[in-house]
Length: 63
Image (cartoon, rainbow, N blue to C red):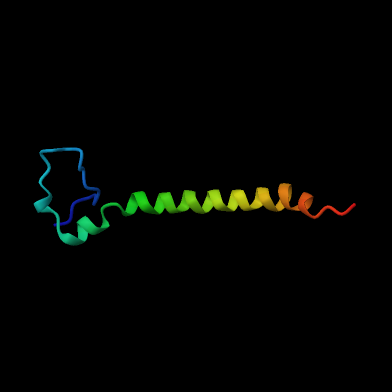
């Protein structure tokens, strides 16, 4: 029977990791990593747009 959440509560010293399968231990940080990846992509996209519209036009301004 699968638990409702695969997040490992590692902050609880009484939690026994032996009850989890290796697959659950591998997938435990998934919910954290996908959000971190999304924020990283968002930050790079925002930085690129700032460069594209605010910095790049002034680098090659020949007038």
